[in-house]
Length: 308
Length: 299
Image (tube, rainbow over all chains, first blue to last red; front, side, top):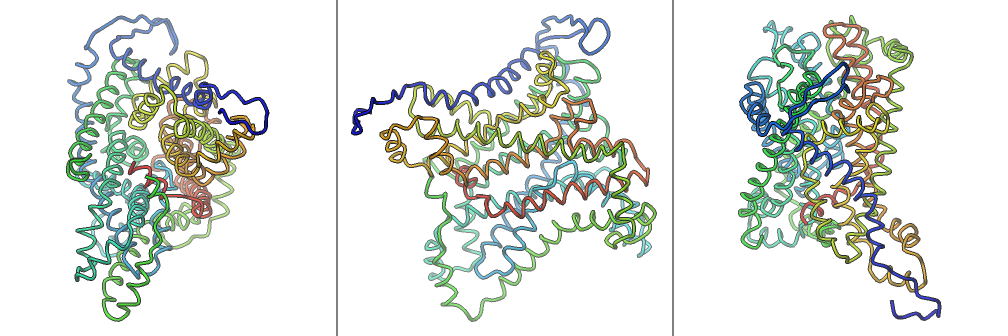
């Protein structure tokens, strides 16, 4: 800022410049993230009673301590919802990431054909909203419109039920797989392409097979990408909502409080129990946070070594 | 981190090909079969919905699922007629939320990412840590309080209530910071400053064009994210005329459990709303920089 060859007055590069650029983000971040989080925590310690009619009648609120948290954690529906979401995640996350990794490795195999077509086709469902993906698969599951059922009928087999107890989890996990595998595949494939091939050359000269190269070299090198796609999957999975909500009219197995988020919605907007809803969502968010941290901690040691 | 932004040219592939042209052709064939199965799995529901959209409601339950029917234009007309063209209104709303929201979000992210990447200022570390923490915040804690706060200022149920919250995108800011670091040389900025250009002119005429590729990626991510978003409009909106397409089809479905005629409408609506998005992805795929995502995730 001292050199000024043109002889003009140097522009004042004030310390405010970066702040000016960041201002819109800071304002919006404060308004739509920090304040709502603070408000949610505040609400979770409050008991609301609504006086008068309508949603915006006079509210009588009192401090209730941890009552809302206790109520949430001892509510069998909420706890059962948490259990369902965990069970669902146990199916869906490994299958999404496992298949995404498999497809990415296959795409990265030398001399494989139809690479562009298959990559685009597998990525395509990313553009389909969760609600519409659930509608599509819902119709493919529904006995009266399902092609699988049509085939079963031709073979004189009984109708297949995709919505009954254990199958329902696979049906839902399948929707997550269909929607998510392409995006994760692209992320992993891209990190694979960033690895210089000279690394494989040495292994090939030593006589390593493609399978060994994939297992011993490629997978460890893309492990950071795997951990982070895994992290995003965990965050997304525990907030499961639109898929079961969309399938609900097709099945009686899915109750109105089937996942925690449905329960929270019901408490907040149907039962006017804002404190309870806030506490339940704080519990869920903390659960997600703890799980993410554990995941990162666990895998960081294995994948990033000691220097992480 | 910048080293991972460009996919490395694969000089090794060609050498390898030359050396081992004969033999070892079996594994790629197996790989091809598995990949084609994956492609089939991903395309089948889309093909199904297009086939099903062409069926009359009787054909829907009687003919084989993937066979085309004879009612395509009738279904389309019925869909258009529903609620005085409400479906197309939903489509326009989705376009407005996703288009405008993603443009504004990309601009805000670009400015913040540029500030974080190219300026050293007190508090930048705190700001960056807050943004990173924001990436991990599950949307769920925000939904209920965001509604209450919107209601408190009288915005709940308006277009603004869906549009404003999606403009802030911590992950987009994070990506823009990565990309500004890699794509904007400090020396260019210094030269422009010496020539007397103002900071905002530098940003508009030099920095934004340099970041274009990264910004397209951030835009696409956010566009698809808003288009696919369900919970926010579901909680904020009560007037059906303001619904985005996802929420509209959801309420459609809820109304007609077991009603064959409504099924045809829902299926037609799904088909119509899927096709433009697929075209968008196919066209914009060329500009999409997944390596930016992968590089960003490594950092």
